Image (cartoon, rainbow, N blue to C red; front, side):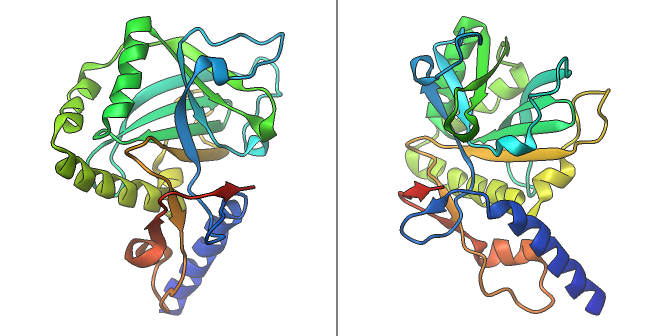
Length: 248
């Protein structure tokens, strides 16, 4: 029993170290799960020497720039679009970009019609663009050819269900993915997509927010003695914030 408690405590410390860098909800001062969003390409600020988006829609993410290496020259990189089952729930859409041993992940709700509208745009343009803005500086852009994969397309029917059914699926998606991000499950299970870098050094994940899939705050309280951190999060730790006000 003592060993189990010690392990749980270490996991808690390791997880909250990165949570302390997350934005905070104005109303509660609790950390907000990192967010991504589809934005018009015109909203992306880029350096004069950088490539501009060649898609009309860009998927931007909120990440810690100090944990993603873009400074090392000629670093191998790769973009992957697929799905991931977190917490044994329904599959979630996931967009991954890896540079060297560092990876960024955007998790998207397959029951959200706004997600599929953006993917339809990319499918028509045959391109996708991912980005993040380090510390408010110009966007770092990652582009690739894109075509909607048949296995992903099979999930699209979830977004055509009645609103009440979609709401239930969305709640399950948020519970599973957010708990997976907070507890470290996503970090532990995600594998490198670059053979030259078989082990990931840093992995960051966010959820894609839309008007249907809202933000989430983390309320890690009332952890019982001997209880694993994941169980504490699943029992009480993930709360919907509607809407949050965030600050750095």
